[in-house]
Length: 127
Image (cartoon, rainbow, N blue to C red; front, side, top):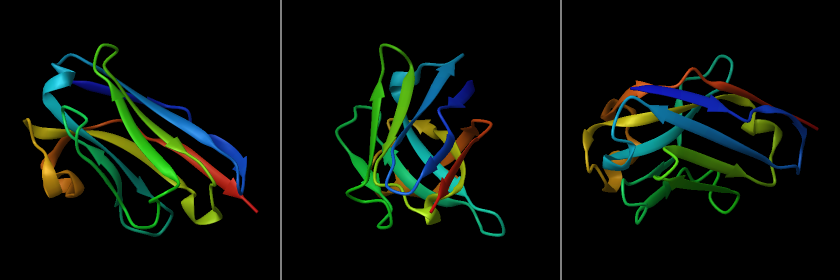
């Protein structure tokens, strides 16, 4: 499985970006997917997760109400719409696939439940 993240860039605070993650080499629709981020000098943290069916979505408290995770299984693509961006959202954003099929629930928020990771895309928010 390969994951290719894109859509990062530089934006001013209050602006928006949409990240995409395209999967290849596996059955995308059978797996939960997630977005994580890592800021300089900080540990990687969970941002958002979505179940294989898209019925369940989880968000970190810091992004609730501003970010929306979605997926298009027909296009093997995961999205993260980021609105009202803040300077503290600056980080490298990674998409990831869950380790097992049909994983859902709170497991989507734990990075040890993911086994394949994209290369990361930089998001920089300036004041």
